[in-house]
Image (cartoon, rainbow, N blue to C red; front, side, top):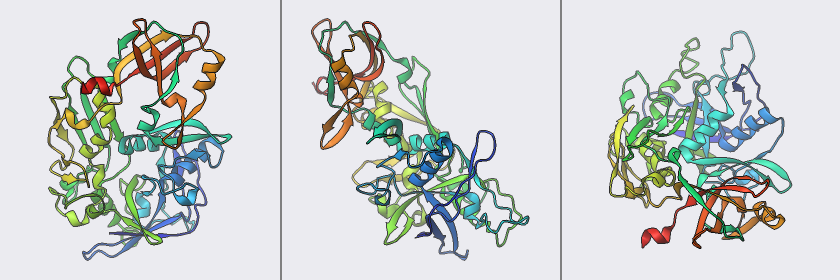
Length: 427
């Protein structure tokens, strides 16, 4: 079990090595105490929460402070109205789990700061939370915005093109997927007792699409596996001061919850309706929502577009790198069995159709202002560019799409991703 306690503020970081950011967080905000019911003694480690982690990386890259805006990853302490759904994600390196620290600085201190890049953390968030990244003006300042990818596809008309237009459409083959690879690139290759019980690995699925060979790939380089975390935790500095472990500089991620002024791991009781099946020790299992099949359902609205005409078919389970017998049921949701086929209909409705719409329409000053403006939708301010664009085609039919690109010179060449018509589908 993990018990997290507040510590002092995040103080510093350094940049080493070509192409890598090596971060040394001295006295970070969070401290974890790790203990178990077996004979292995209680240990403690540092972690840093997602918002602080990314904000620090952005500071290193840009030289600017506080340029991250993410209600999804932020806490009230960051100035947001409430704790975000993904705010309590704790990141730690292997050496922290083993009890190493940068201080005291000496020739005998073998502490290794972990290595990561902005791409690594962005890939992690896209794979495990299906988040999108953009640049927006928040107030008068340009900031990096991280939010659920669905928020970039708002099913509400924000801009209407005033003139009738000639629309050309073409299939977007790149948005049809014949296979899916999803999960973690590391942490499941444990050559230890019970290593094969690791469930947070990666899995491959095959869709009914056969005419194209595109893979929907969402892989994180970070480690979510409980066994990998426990194996390295047991190699404590006090007993193994000279041991060089392969995961010393890897990044481990933990799903956390608040307990008063502290934090602790989320177990099955926090997220599931009943005890998970197919795992050796359900009572000590954590990070249960990061198994490959659970991740796949987080991406359902972006996999579903290519399968809208195959709703009576299934996505077939292909293979897995670890324990594919895990069975979980989130509160209020379906039961997910890792090695089962998935009916396409269970992915729900897609956000769009894999079809690009091209047209010409002059960019007037009024239209330019709308393009750069915002709309209040359900009490929230949304950039118009994320909403639906509506226009009348050469046949007099109304069409809608999500903005892709614009070449404003001359007649103005627009490109949209065709919106999914829920009403037509239901009829």
